[in-house]
Image (cartoon, rainbow, N blue to C red; front, side, top):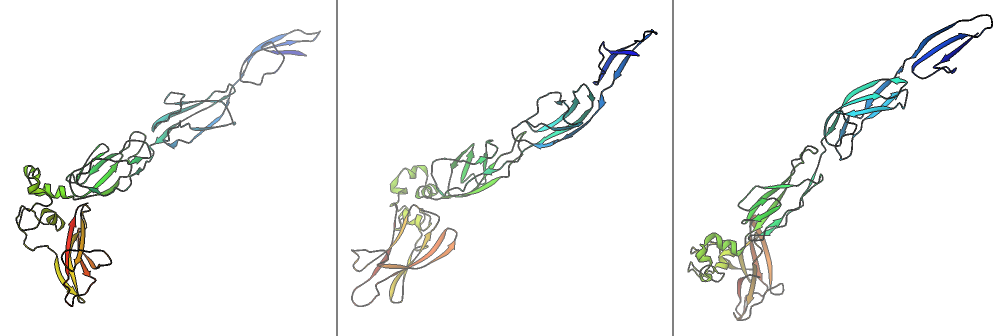
Amino acid sequence: AVTKLYNGGATVPSNAGSYAVTASISDGNHTGSASGTLVINPAAATVTLSGLAQTFDGSPHAVTVTTSPAALAVTTLYNGSATAPSNAGSYSVTITISDSNHTGSAAGTLVVAQAAQTITFGTLATQLAGTAPLTLTATASSGLTVTYTTSNPAVATASGSTLTIVGPGTATITALQLGNANYLAAATVAQTLTVQPTFASFAGAFFTPTQLANPTVSGPTANPAGDGLPNLLKYAFNLDPTQSNATAGLPGAGTANGSLTLTFIQRTDISDITYLVEVSGDLLTWSSGPSFTRQVSATPIDAQRNRVTVQDLIPLGGTTPRFIRLRVTQP
């Protein structure tokens, strides 16, 4: 019979480690002993990595680690740090089992991809030439600042989020977000800006600053060309106010179905004047509206003009004369 002790205890060890072993004969007729070292090596374990491809979302991106046997404690390092990364990029990952009875490791590369982003940019309302600068309000889903470009600086210029109206016409305003280390560039969004002329912008295109300061030359009722057509009518018919235009582009009277008609060119690219056809029987009292006139046609000439014909509802005949005219007014 012998007595065996492991590090001084009779319990046989199960965990990995080194144990001093002593064996002594416990027989009344015999004597003897022996000693040695019992070494229990850690068992090999398998480590598996997953979740190595992720996308930036502002949160930490930890890899998924599984072990066999299951649920063993591990130490995970990302580029040598125990903190899981949040930003987009490539990170060297090392996994080491930290269990005294098992050994094993694994390595891989965690790639956190840049996130996609989108731009929201609503339609732009039609503006009038001379309007105060606008503040553009496009937003990016990333929260990053949106920048802008303009296709026609003669119509509008962009600086930061401020859009400055320069003159009449159209321009494409494009919203951009070029991304950063964590976000990909967004798809651009373009909106069309239409800037309508005004009488002021019309006058500014033909008169010098000195003339603009003199309403007897550049004002709505002035007639610098001396042809009887004031500047406001030249604006309404898109004529040069500095040139004598004779009858070019002016309304024309006629008859249809026994009533007077008036045909004129109406600009559709402006909104600061009103075209009003009026009729009279005595040149003193003038009337307009659906009780007195009706619009016969409005035929587009181009994107900026219609040819409009309006008819007097009272027929010609008898001894009562009929008159028809076009009056152009500003609000």
